[in-house]
Image (cartoon, rainbow, N blue to C red; front, side, top):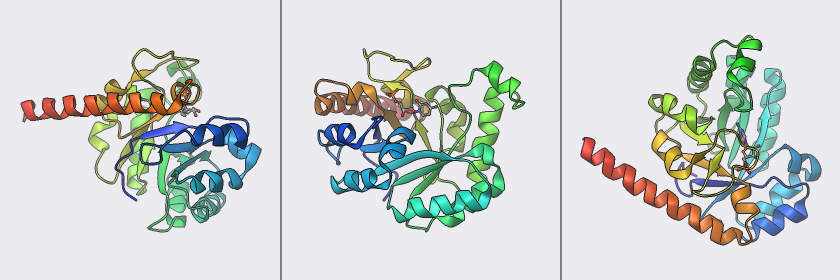
Length: 243
Ligand code: C5P
């Protein structure tokens, strides 16, 4: 496994395996990975992960572990047993928890990424929680993930440009809240387009409803990939011009 193509992670936010698998069957494993979150995992447990893997899809298990180091480490080990591609923890769990999580995952096991500050929090809420200025907190949490040897962070595309300097081959930015050009924001408040996110430094793009709720999910995914390819070419040309 490497941090390479496919860069799009389709969020399978479904209430049961039937819905998730019906959507997943319309997706090409060479074109995307999939994300299983709390709702689907609480409904179906590990079996839905295995079923998705059976379709050839790599799974990001998005359960955002946050507990004492021993508990999180053991949960990470079980996620690794499941053979998922990526798993995540809350960076707010602190350096000891991050370190324990990383140690629990075998070298060839899942990629481990940290959630910084949830994008659902407003800057005022972040202050009220005692976390200080939102931007600074995101950056310090991202730094602590990198220092603990994690493989990257989940952050909003807006935050990605501020974390660009922390990126590297072993440290990636995974960004949700992405909308292909012209699609509805749904309940997301601060969306960015595929090209904006890639220009900001995102390595992986989490896209849910614009693909899963489309009349033709495969065509919607193909359109996202076209947009990503065009953006990458544009960014590469810009880098060349600036070098
Ligand atoms: O359907 P949509 O593209 O909005 O789905 C986005 C996915 O990314 C959902 O699974 C959502 O829970 C997740 N996510 C997010 N914002 C975050 C963290 C995760 O939208 N900050």
